[in-house]
Image (cartoon, rainbow, N blue to C red; front, side, top):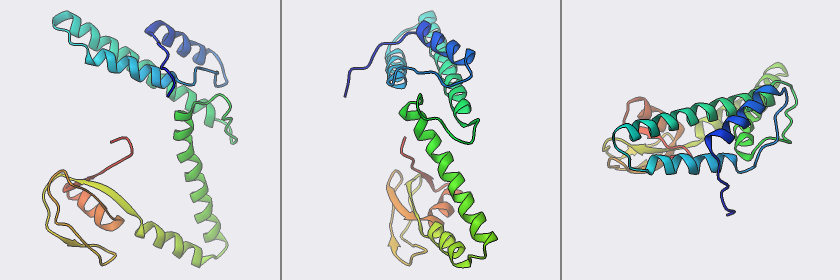
Length: 185
């Protein structure tokens, strides 16, 4: 992996200001989010006491607010037209927008199948959605269960992680027995 470039609050502010002042997504360093993450991580790991700790916490809050605003503005600019211009977007921003694209495609599939009388396609979409699996982390112990796919799962202890059928996972999540595990966890 390449070396992470240093960034400071002033340069982050300049990037944010430039993004606000322009209508199009601006070209920025491709490792910006890595640099910011590195900076915040180092700040949070510094052991300060008293007033220095409060200053550090305030600085982290300011950086967090600026990054949140920068990301929000860049994503909003990218989606304001029907055709997304990916040229100046960073990989992390493209990751966010990919879900938007998938949402549009799924919406169009369901709408088209419904309006064109394609019942089999709707049934397939519905069945595939029900049969998908979800990774969960258990918050409480639970005895063995029989999944909606008629397979046996468990027993599980608190903190165990498992892949379960969608229906079972959502039921356990709803009962606060488990939580969904995402890529970021």
